[in-house]
Length: 109
Image (tube, rainbow, N blue to C red; front, side, top):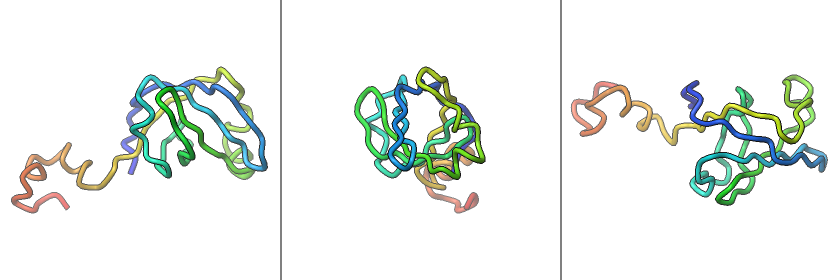
């Protein structure tokens, strides 16, 4: 689940076409905290993390994604708004329901 809140701004560092388009995103956070397979919204376009290191991470976009979004025109240097997915519904609920911090009463889920 995405919050819809932009948590950071990233920069498209490189673009490689290998069937799918592989995008390397540089971000101001420690990207090693992203799980491989995690979803990150890039200016509203949800892409899956393929690899990562401390300075950035790679995602892939299919031809269909490039066709139906603005992503097909992105080049190195393009700025993107980033929204990392919450790890679980419980994480999201804990931000809005104090009872979720203790688990009692079970009111929010």
